[in-house]
Image 1: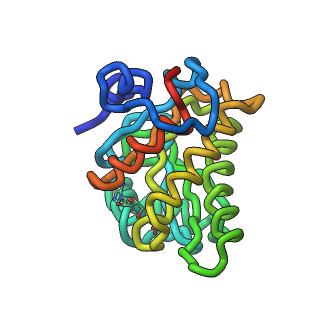
Image 2: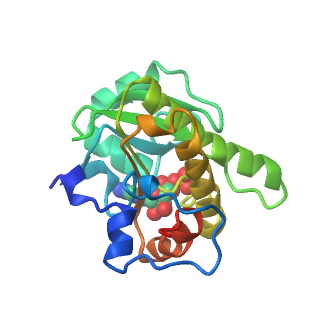
Image 3: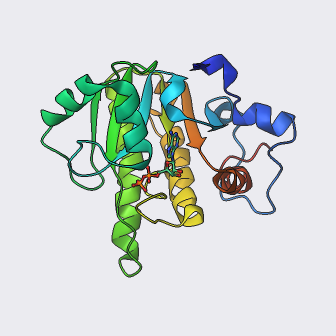
Length: 210
Ligand code: ADP
């Protein structure tokens, strides 16, 4: 099974069909142009036929559990061979490879922070950096779509609400930036129902419809 861009609803469509509802408080002003450029999708990121998918990798970049394991298993041995040439990455850093047997064109491997209760500033800065460096890599490679899993919120233990605020705020600021219009679609991919609910609650605060 492959999921095509046409199968993925924009947040504008999700407001129209009532899945997303106006939030009590808005953190940013409404800007309708962004509603066509951002999506929320529940499902398996490995089957998405888009220009790039992001992998929540570890510093070795050689594969692991969770979404990382699913991506490596589906992409095949050649992905592992290319990853061996990358010499790992630091937390907050992102590196790009081909996607081999996956329907997407590229994989952007980003290393999220392992959640630390004490180090609030660093963990936020590092998680922001994952999203920012991934978006910048997509732009540099002329890719038009990027699909993000919820980085650090699985094995790395970052609470989903906190991580979603960081992700949405960074993506909203990216949309406002000079290069923001270079990407046609930024897709938040959620796996669990709980994570979907968190995104559905918080998206209207960062991307209000009116
Ligand atoms: P991390 O180590 O960064 O926490 P994980 O892979 O453990 O990364 O989890 C990141 C997120 O990816 C979690 O929300 C998890 O539920 C989700 N996830 C796991 N498998 C998939 C998949 N095939 N497609 C999309 N998301 C997935």
